[in-house]
Amino acid sequence: MSLRTIRLELARSKEFPEGSAGHGYVLKAPLTPDGHLDAGTWRKHKELCTVVRFSADQDDERGTLIHTAGRRWAFSYVPRDDSDDEPIFRLDNHIFRPGEYVSITEHDGVERTFRVATVT
Image 1 (cartoon, rainbow, N blue to C red):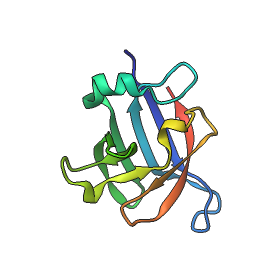
Image 2 (tube, rainbow, N blue to C red):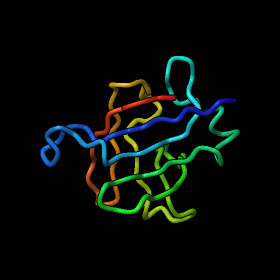
Image 3 (cartoon, one colour):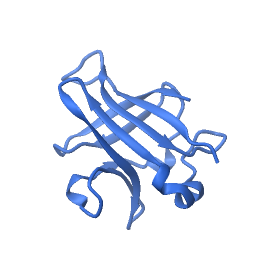
Image 4 (cartoon, rainbow, N blue to C red):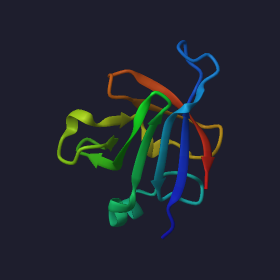
């Protein structure tokens, strides 16, 4: 089993017309050969599937990739406390390759779009 390191950077928005490489996520997760999240491998090794949320003006937050009831994927930073979870829109349908986009609802309740910057 090999995990991929996926770097997500804030895409263009009203607040950041050019996007922002200083605001995003570094996710470790298993991917299928075509770049989709490998849910079966995630189930077997979920403790290794981590996320770091970074922002130029805040300390990094460290958490895990979780799957909840209702087929909802999210980043969670405090175990067994869903108030801090950041849902990821249709994560199981996304292809992780540079240039693709992922929508995440952040702590402030705002859904933001992030661009896949790298997959290593």
